[in-house]
Image 1 (cartoon, helix red, strand yellow):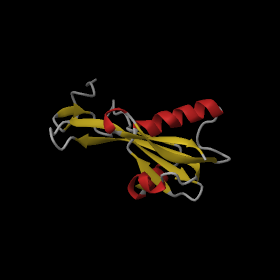
Image 2 (image 1 turned 180 degrees about the vertical axis):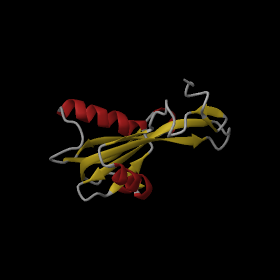
Image 3 (image 1 turned 90 degrees about the vertical axis):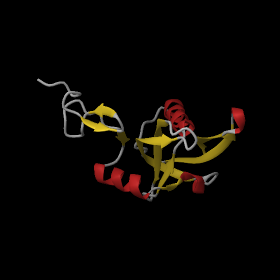
Image 4 (image 1 turned 60 degrees about the vertical axis):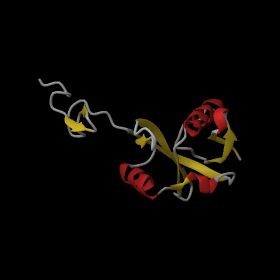
Length: 140
């Protein structure tokens, strides 16, 4: 039997298995149907529009994206987290702070998504070292 890398498609100079090949690892984590996840990925509004605005969180989609540094051209993989409210509105964030605070929220409340009943949350922005800012999820 061939190894996944022997029969892999080449993407961005590295050999990875195609989605239909053995060894492919999905890059999407979701609490909704595949169709709803695709809609959320494609239709999510920028999360910055929801800063400090409470909403009721029900579902989550997290997928990997590739970011390119405009100065160096260096590529890094980052999580894009899509928070979906009770009305199926989707809000997208590229922030490890959202992922880590979501993990903390689930742990402390001892709840796992999908959330039924929904959890009232809001996203805040905090300053961190180097003049950067990070998004965090907190209870509303």
